[in-house]
Amino acid sequence: MSFARTARPTRAVRPRLLAAVTVALAALALPACENGEGVRDEGPSSLPGSSVRDTGRPGRAVPCSGRHMRATVTRVSEPVNHLLLTVTNTGAVNCSLNGYPKARFGDSGALAPPAREPKPRGSRITLSPGGSAYAGVLLSAADGTGGHGRTVTSLTITLPTGPAANPALPPKGVYVDDTLRITCWLPNRKAALTY
Image (cartoon, rainbow, N blue to C red):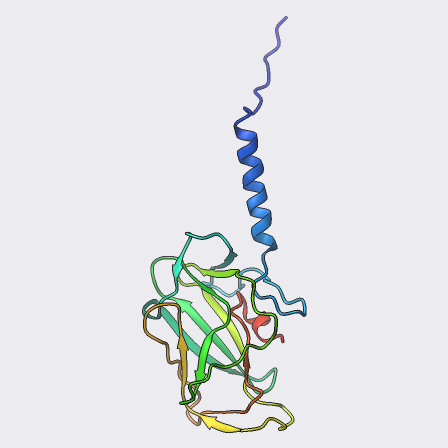
């Protein structure tokens, strides 16, 4: 009586499989934004048409360009005095963003300060074609205690390459004061408005 021997993986396959599993686990462990209060990458947006992933591996995407991005601003009811900034990849290839948006409100040359410290630790948001990334903006103190208040009617977002984006603000503008803050780029809108 003879028995067929079960084929075993070759020695060359095992290290490759182990390496692939290690890389996948490491990618899952990367935070989208390190803020000191536990906000982490919550995974892809559940919105239809969105395709976002967080990756720290180089060479998988080009820097997002103003030529291939659509930027919009949405006034939200909660939390109060907040805007949601959304950028969408309108190009044909994956592109990446990292850190905080470079956002200027009005004619001031100053960038909106980051919402939380410490700053992100080098992780990236990679947008597939049609995918979006989000940032939350605190415009002013809810109790009116912020100083140097003013109404602004323009917003300029500088992306890694290409021309700047100028998403439209509400027609009457928005009121900002010195409590103005902006989150880093995040892969879903809920995380962007929770700070």
